[in-house]
Amino acid sequence: MLISSFSGPLLADSKYDFGASILLDYDSFDSLFSDEDVGDFSDNEVRRARVSLKSKHNDYFSSKIQLDYDPETSKIEYKDVYLSFTGFDDFWLDVGQQKEPFGLEKLNSLRKSQFIERSIATQSIAPGRNKGISIAMDRKTWFWKLGQYKLNSKNKQVKPRATTGRIGWVPFNSKKLNVHFALAASSRKLFGEKYKINERIEVHTSDSVVEGKSLKAAKVILKGAELIIQRKAFSFVSEIQNSSVRDTKDRQRNYRGYYWQLGYRITGEAHKYEMGKFGGIKPNSKYGAWELTYRQSELDLKKENQVVRSKTYGLNYYFRKSTKLMFNYIDASNQDKDELTDGKAYSLRFQYSY
Image 1 (cartoon, one colour):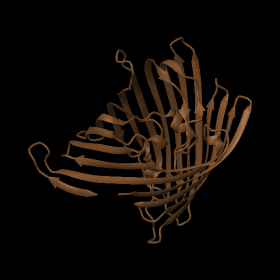
Image 2: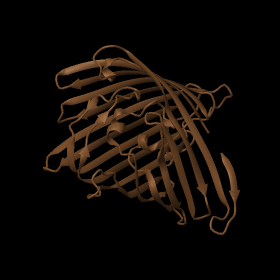
Image 3: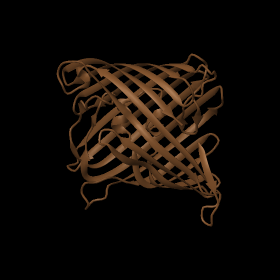
C-alpha cells in the first residue's frame, strides 16, 4: 500500500509502501508432539504480527524495515533491515540484516506458503536472517545471489561468519507454465560455537521433540536443491537439503532432509511466480479461491539414528488476496533408534495481510 512520497535534497522523490500482517492459529496434537508422555493437547496463539516499510528513495537506493511482535517473549524484534543499491543495470547490492539466499521455502514468506508451517527439513537445516552484504542478479531465464554474513556468537572473542549463495534456472515462466530449478550452498565458520538440531514437528505451539547432539562446531557446510513445476492450477514443489558439521575435534556429523508437495487450485488459479520466489494467490472470483495441498517431509539425523517423517493434508480458502483460511491435518512418525512413535495433529489459521 503506497502511503506517501516527497522530494528532498538527499531522498529525492522517495516513495513508501507500508505493509502489515497478522496470523492467528489454533493447534491440537497428541503426545508425539509434546514432551509429556500421555494426553492430547491444544493451544492457540498469535503466530505472527508484523509490519514493514519499503522505501524507494531514488533511482539508486531503496530500503526495507520489518518489525515483528513475538508473543512468546512479548517483545518487538527487527527482522529485515537493509539498504539496497540498484544503480546497476542487472545487479543490486543489499547491506544489512536480511535472509541468507538458501532454500526456497525459507526465502518465501510464511504468509504466502501453501502450508501453515514450513517443513521440518527446512526448519532444521536452512539458515534464516543475519547481518551482511550480498550481491544479486536477475536475468530472463536465470538468477543468482551471493552474500557474506556475520553470525551471532555468545563468545565476543570469535566472529563466526558464513558465505552463502544460490543460483537458479527458469526455462519456462508464463501464465500457463512455470519451471524453476535452483542450487544453494553455504560455508559457515563457527569457531567452536554450539550447533544443535532442536525442532518441533511442524506444529508451532508444540514442543521441540527432535533433538540432535549438541556440538562445538568448527565448520558447517550446507547444500540444497529446489524444483518447482507449475502447470496452470497444478503445482509440484520439492527441496532436498544437507548439513555436514565438523566439530572442533575433527569429527563429522551429517543431517539430511527433504520435502515434496502438491497443490491444486479447484477454482483454477495459479500461484504467482517471481524469479526465485513462489508467491500467493489472487482469486479469480469474488467468491474466493479453494486449494487442496499435500506434503511429505523427512529429516534424517544419521549419527543419532533418528528419522522423523510427516505427511500433511491441507485445505486453503483465499477469501481475497489479503485474507486466507487454512486447515492442515498432520500424520507424523518419529523413529528414535529402535523405538517408533506415531502421532496426529491438526492446525487452523486465519490470516490477514495488506
